[in-house]
Length: 248
Image 1 (cartoon, one colour):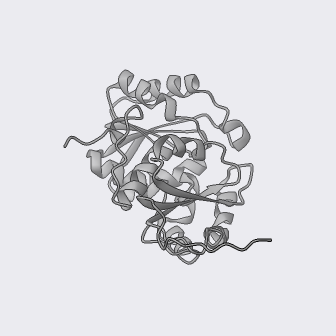
Image 2 (tube, one colour; image 1 turned 180 degrees about the horizontal axis):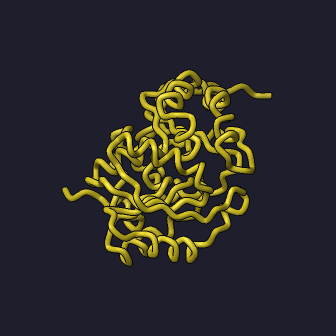
Image 3 (cartoon, one colour; image 1 turned 90 degrees about the vertical axis):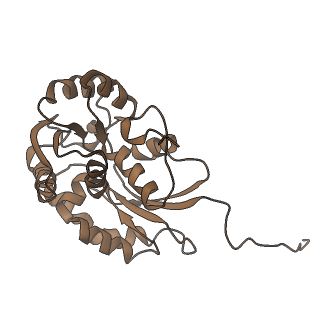
């Protein structure tokens, strides 16, 4: 065997370093982030054990698994932002608790989640009244509406596919999402489509064009907020008003 000398780089050539804690059951968010995050962004993924059936009790179980999931990122990585990719889970566990437990597992400048990201996006777009479309049953979604109300965001209109099985949620098609969305929005400022596992990315602009209002989704707002926290402009066309490039 021949031994060769080598040199090392102390810092890899990347604009920012992001970490994403993804549910075991989630088949969507990684695909979405590949379309939304630039190639010069380092994106590390860790998985967290999650139940196949979505209930408030099942979501709460993830609280004690968050630190362990975050600790599975590379030890040498110093993150600009790490996110827990579960809207309903954050609503049940609590944003502060999520941030605390993620921060105990890795080195990161900031922590976010879809709920925190949604609130930030609403503030950015001056949205105070949301219609919410969710795949899940009412008791799971009620926690989200409660969190939003504490931040002066009302959600008077709510619709659901009433599906608790994650394996079926990911297979709800875009036409079904579009049909439900355009029927739901009435006297609100915008629409939020909840769930990181729901395949919404390809239908955001179609819905916006139909209803004439902003459409926010869990994965879209999360990508936007992670990039905002990392002080990198996401600026991408085709996925809603929130992500459009800012004018120079």
